[in-house]
Image 1 (cartoon, rainbow, N blue to C red):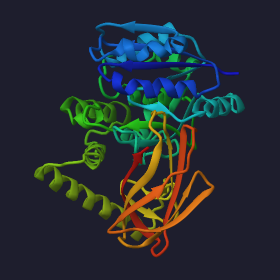
Image 2 (image 1 turned 90 degrees about the vertical axis):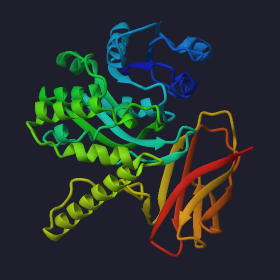
Image 3 (image 1 turned 30 degrees about the horizontal axis):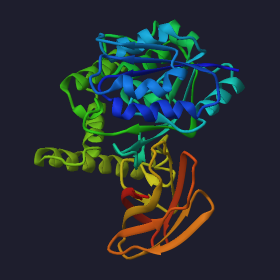
Length: 374
């Protein structure tokens, strides 16, 4: 059986850390865990105390940044399969078990990656990671279509590339994928949801720091030989799409970029150019709140609060919707001014599956997903 080497870097994200650690309790394959804290001042030691039994290596104190901490953590633990999990992200129950079976059934694989959901700071579903696609070596330098926490690398391939570049601050994962690709590593995408990625204002992705865009440019130039990387526009569009409140200039830029994406789609349609990726994920349109037919939300839940009622903001307003919870609880309910309130069945399982469809329209929108607690 394969074993895992998991690193969790942390700096003042300790209020989220319990979910990441709890998610590892819900894996049944062997792993070693390194928790690398940069000297947090937000109760870090209190949070990790109940999880000491699953931590192989712990270091807390000033370091040289996230990439250096991850690299150091990997060097201090053993395991055939390497991954790192940000302190504010967390695995689905049994995610590592699935990944282990992929590697065991295909010994030639070097890199395995799957799907991810984006969730709010409270842990509620926002969207599926939209850029995901099957591996394409030529496309990789122009599009980071691999979601980092949902990616797993054999140690032999990791060491062959020289490991993570600790000088990078934002793109150490994408840079590693590109170097693995350049070395001829065998990648494989599996259509399985493995991880929840939390989105909140303090994430580096949403910082829109110029250094991040500079690192993106360097990767496109270094590995894809693109001196005018249009992918920068795509990254900026994604950053803006994930922002709850946009300034007037940001909103103008967002609408302009969305229009350019529409023109691109129309061009592909007119000239019958087939995209390598499906237009939707689990029924949801990529990059949009629009849904088509029956859509399925999958999400882990490791918080202590029990769900009492599901709250959904939808469009069309006042239409009837069918909601199926955990495959066996079906409810048909009419939205009142675009709001649905659905009683949740009792469950002690750390997993939720909610299927939703509008009975009067194939195309509809999920505007907000949240719940009330008991």
